[in-house]
Amino acid sequence: MQYLQLIRVHQWIKNGFVFLPIFFAGELLNRDLLIKSIIAFFSFSFIASSIYIINDYVDIEKDRKHPEKKNRPLANGTISKKEAVIVFFILFFLSYFFCYLLKSTSTVIIITIYFLMNLAYSFKLKHVAIIDITIIAVGFLLRVFAGGYSTGLFISIWAILLTFFLALIMGIGKRRGELLNAQLTGETRKSLDGYNLQFTDISMTVVSTCSIVCYIMYTLDPLVKKNLHEGIVYTSFFVIIGVLRYLQLSFVYNKTESPTKIVYKDIFIQIDIILWVLVIFILKYLA
Image (cartoon, rainbow, N blue to C red; front, side, top):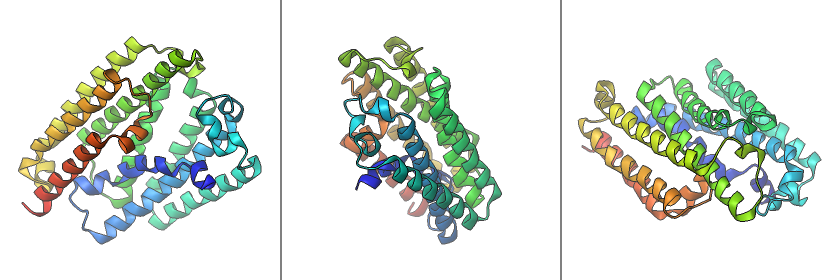
């Protein structure tokens, strides 16, 4: 259990973005492409988990003073530094082994870029305002690219922009939650320099608007309508409602959890996502 907590398996939900190319291409029932997407998912999950270990290793002393992070395996001592390093190398090599199975040079390059970018994030860039959330957003883009290159499927420019903006919303939302926690505890962090609540509120509103516009434009793309269904535009309702719900949780209820935890906990968002997926599935395979 401690090792699952160390590699943060619950964060693997983020790597579900790897499946977006096969999902939107309407090829979910294509066995070969689905297997490739699954392999790419695990490759990304392993490399992402290796980065989490580096983060915890670097911040071990800070985490011990944090009310929640002090319970992490490295911070509370249930897993030693030596054991963490061993797990890191196992995950690192597993990630590239899965890339080898894909026989995709592009996927190897994407995984490497992701690792190096997050390495820089862990040691320095997470303390640089705007650059930090941009790296988070680019990380999600790389997940989509990994899914696209591993399967050879086309990725719409609108899907790329949508992914970037949605990831920015989550990145800004995370910083907003940290700001609220800092106000409650009186403890600030260097990573919050350059942010305040007014800035994060305005930023989330602007980026949310961009996300909705990009999704609508995506559904109006002739190739997308050909691959899926003419009625795909109506799924915009679920996206708009989902974004509004996230903004409501942030602005009205001042939820300070990370976006990942909100997705796990909020039934409203869970139902919205399920209905969105279900409608797209029906339009593609049953309509």
